[in-house]
Image 1 (cartoon, one colour):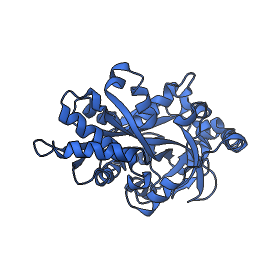
Image 2: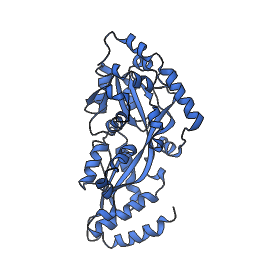
Image 3: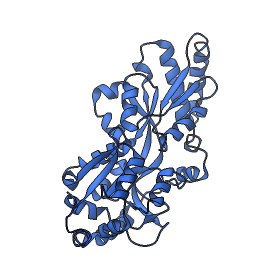
Image 4: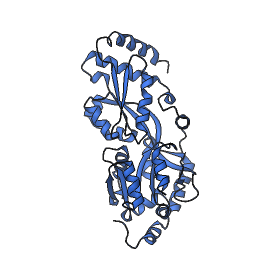
Length: 335
């Protein structure tokens, strides 16, 4: 937007007189090497321009990024948008940090053995039969776990009766689902067909299913219901492979320390200039330069009204009889 330009130029002129005397390194907390956040963090660096040095850090994920931000070890951090919103409800956190931009929606999925996914039929099948299911999460510091816990904490959520097992990471989660240690794996991921996670799920003979939950819809813009195409995906556990499916999505939030919360003038000016540079950049310039990511950034459709009602009706219909189907898979249901 044009209103950014004079402010950015003013800050950069001030900053150019200060960087000669101090460190101008910007650190961005990304995510684990097996996820997409580290690639998004790396893509943010060029948007900062030549006046800044920039380093994207591999981290444990969303929750780890919050700790690094609070300790002042990074200036920017990526996080699941709905989780960042929860953090900002804390006045002490909101006094120091803010969301400066939202980019690149991530999709919510569960994956499991084909016979189990088909027995569930839909996420409603998971909700209504949670006591029959064990679900795995890839690490306590991961954004996947943070998003799952936020769903679990919704008023009246049936997920409170779901047996949850924490795995060390995403590869460990795939192995646990394949071995039958858990019935399902929960992930929140940019629908990138090149991502090794999706490749590993396919090689393990597992199936992906999108997530739609009526409680998410009530949260408005926190979650968006969108169409995505992922190899090895199924329409509510039914239909053929590589189908376009509907699932809940949550944007990626870029968090930053507020410049006014920094006591040192040079650091405050540097942070203000860096924030304005990122805010002024187009979303497609802040994402990795793969064709699929550009396409993702350009697709902002939101399912609303009658269309969303039709989707939810289909989900509920697909889940009918899930308890009986799950019971047929094993004489001893998972606990």
